[in-house]
Image (cartoon, rainbow, N blue to C red):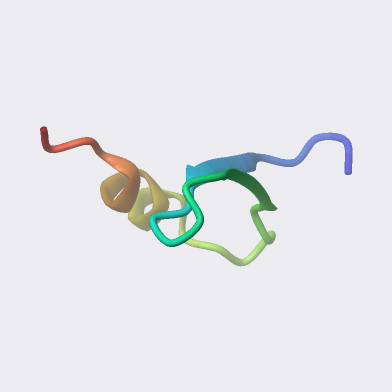
Length: 39
């Protein structure tokens, strides 16, 4: 999984950190928009 983006997130249900690997067909702009912290 070299040269891929990893998405780190905190689960609201179990309160643990998890990792996802971004697929090549994922929309980078949408991921950035959804991951923007509005607080």
